[in-house]
Length: 168
Image 1 (tube, one colour):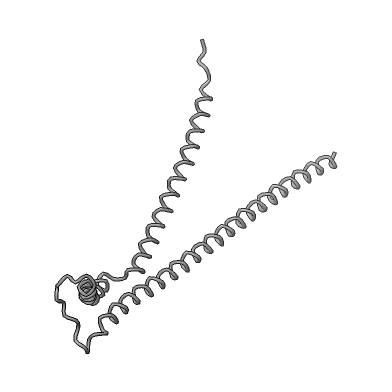
Image 2 (cartoon, rainbow, N blue to C red):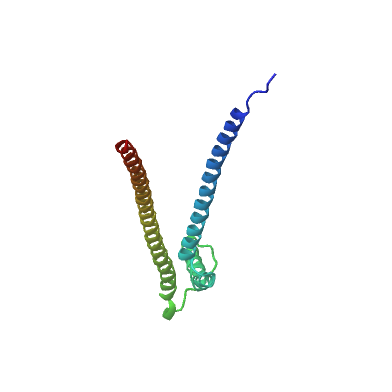
């Protein structure tokens, strides 16, 4: 007996290749999008929190004032008996000014980082939209060119057919 034709297996193999190729393309696109999102998130974190030395400088500047003010407030409110001395008269308001300055600086810096990140996101979305429009226009131009070429070939064939019939 003759063996069955193997063409159906080839068609199945082609279908499998096409399906796995599409899945592979989706997986690659997803990975690229995740990598881009990670880099954007990392950049936003750098903008928001800044250089590590700056963070430690702010911490060193604000921590003593926060600890002392907190201890004074707790001892005066709950009478723990810690006997925390108030700051000397000349420096009395500076503790709160230091705390307010550090908190204000951090809030303003975070606000600017958020605005900059929003601006970058809007610019990226606009670029993606413009790119999609350009790709669509390019595809349409290629389609029009292909149709024009095909019409030219059909016209040439018709001309040849008409010439051959008129020569008879």
